[in-house]
Image 1 (spheres, helix red, strand yellow):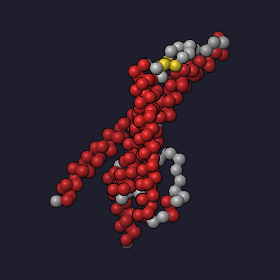
Image 2 (cartoon, one colour):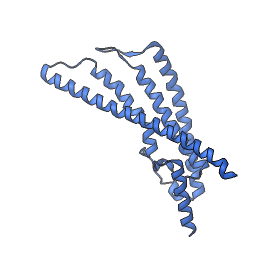
Image 3 (tube, one colour):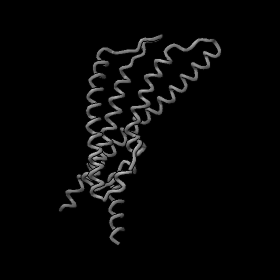
Image 4 (cartoon, one colour):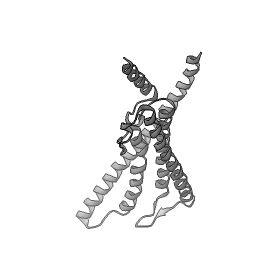
Length: 199
């Protein structure tokens, strides 16, 4: 009976995980595409300046906005692949249960900070969107899309950290942020490691 009731939960968890993975991949794609656009724009500006002595108007302002897309929209993907700077100097010296508790506490502080950051940047992005904020320069380049990208990037990062927090606290999975695997795969690996320890 318990196995039957667990199946819908696993299906829902898997669906949510796949949805989050898709959203994170889209954010990473937009960040990578922004790098390409900025690279070509700066290259064209350098070539024109070398030939004519004049730069292309708006390249500097546009590059600043694109840089925001590059940095923030890749945060969720970086968290999902475990590429953020981290150290296990403390947790590697702890037993299984204390290690999970310390990891959960650390992620809890991260969730609180990210929630505050989303609220702070979200209110600023809404104000910028309402007034259609733009950057003064040779061209009036809108910067409100960049402010929205900050909120979206932080939200994806928050959801990835929340997913890691849930896995560590309730699924018995240790350090899922370093594996890049789905929930069911992580549970299978942990069960195999536990059975190996018993043998």
